[in-house]
Image (cartoon, rainbow, N blue to C red; front, side, top):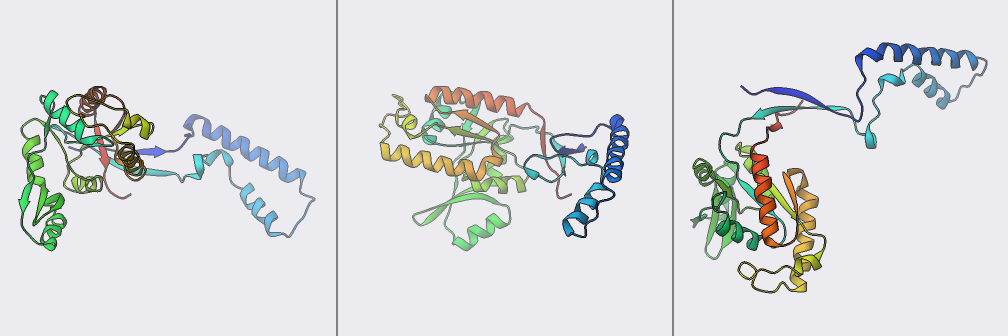
Length: 264
């Protein structure tokens, strides 16, 4: 049975054992200052507002960073009985996927071939709306479609599947109760991307134009989808990146997963 709890987002919490004492202390200070300034009268709106605020105990008001409002989020625990899918985002993605496929097949498997569908755009979008398809790519005369069934088929075989979907499709996965491990590869700059080489998986030299484009695209992805990131690995040699990815996948798979349980 799902366990639920409330967690409170604030920079500080009032402690029960001190709350009564603090409130009395604050009340005493207010009483002192009211007596001291009792002879001063003002009909201005500001003075009235200050008097109204003076009747509130400041010890009972939480001080929140960046004026954030006090809120609770209802969440529930999810028991992941099968390996979670893995989505990797960032520069040099094809090379990283190829290395994971060939050298770490025990841990990750490439997503199986997408289903080729010769259908109208409306029919494909209807499949997405009906939660049958997660993502699709338009090809010449057909669509390559990633289906919910094909993802579950891989995970039910006790394997992590390496997803090949756009980041905006993450929400669709959540809607069908699939919670991927999302890993972002972060490079310091375009020059660092350009310097990467590998005799097997990155034979072609990365051009300055291509490295700049990949870096800028990665920045946009991080800005728009960082809330979905499960982990971030630092860019560098492909072998080092893959090692970091495997470590992250192993750690996240063994963590307790909590997800939002709906509106308050």
